[in-house]
Length: 444
Image 1: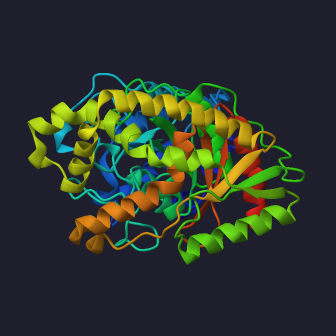
Image 2: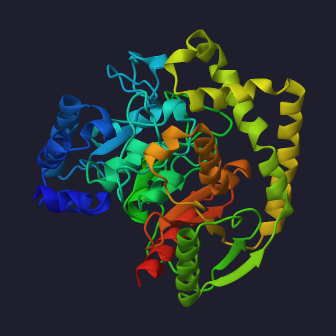
């Protein structure tokens, strides 16, 4: 049954547990055994948590037998990006700067999902300190892209995406500061949810830029993402029943997002638009000048905070870092405090302009990533190429972070391409319901 289980969604596995057809211990052992024997194991998982996972699974088995399950994912395993604290298990954020860092307590979201009965399979590899969208990390490991192990997986939640895409976890939890959940989800044909900044507490998560950092799931389906979001948020699961695109008002953002787009992402996006229109959605197109102005300030808004948090640790031991990531951090040290404050004040005004421009629409649509993953060897051989591809890969997803939105990426059916649906802050439940309808339209 192992192969069959590993192809199922997290929600389907939960229903199997509820029906008494799947034992949580057998399920967790199947995943752990698959991890241990997988050829890319050491490129996906930094470390596994077998004993703890089986302990949680055994408790879930007992509840299932008594008809006392704690929720639809009780007993369904999960992988954790290696920046979420796990008690007694190293949490190093993909960096030798944090080598051996072992927390005494679980992070808040780890605690929430563990209490809900989800066995933790282990910690997945990631971009160093979460500061790159390509997913390369020669310091620890670079996870394999599902379509070509020698191409970039997308990051920074690279191992999180790989764990689900390669069937080594039914669900993964990552973080998104500028695209780090959505980008690897798109390049590995997964569903990825970026939550609103400040909605899910970051207690016990290694920071990158706290004003932008968010927590979100990477999954096979919108239903899985919705159930995981509810646990992370400690809120009721969004009701996806009867979701429809009929009458939905969708806006295609033409500012910045389509500049120099590759053929495949453009094809995937057009396929999605056609499916949404056929399902009854009304689709408009518009430019929003606030986006271009905000994008021009992205360097100071992100990099200055990142260096403010990590500059001292980096300069104390710079040689242990992957040079392109280290240099990107250091660029943040060139900005002055008054410029940073002025940029944030201007961004807040631009966010108000955005809100006015999209009023009346259910979601704003763009291609999740305007490019396709490049070969790892080519990126490693040319720092200039690496930097250009990194910025381009993160360009579209970063719009949602700058505008303070929540966002949901769906696979389009064209490999390594996604369609990104964005909604206002705090609108995750409505966005997930819309996403369920969009997912169904794409599958029709």
